[in-house]
Image 1 (cartoon, rainbow, N blue to C red):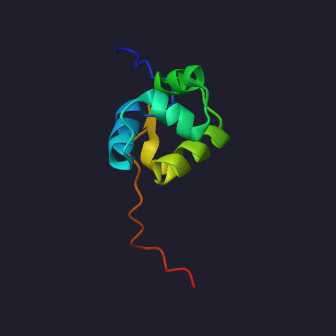
Image 2 (image 1 turned 30 degrees about the horizontal axis):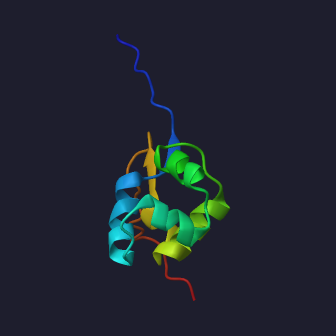
Length: 92
């Protein structure tokens, strides 16, 4: 039997999602987004290339792009989320 190699599990800020959000928020370039978010352009490029990021950067980008932080995230190497909780009682 062949051994399956697992992909590393990582959560990244997805470039294509950010580009869609940029368009909706009226940003045409990464430079404009960097200036508006006060995130250094080199840091922004690293983040969008799948590099590490800090929660503060995610929060700042979300505020600048007027979106929820989860709108930008992709969990690579994980199964699709299963949020259907039909058996769960609603919280009061």
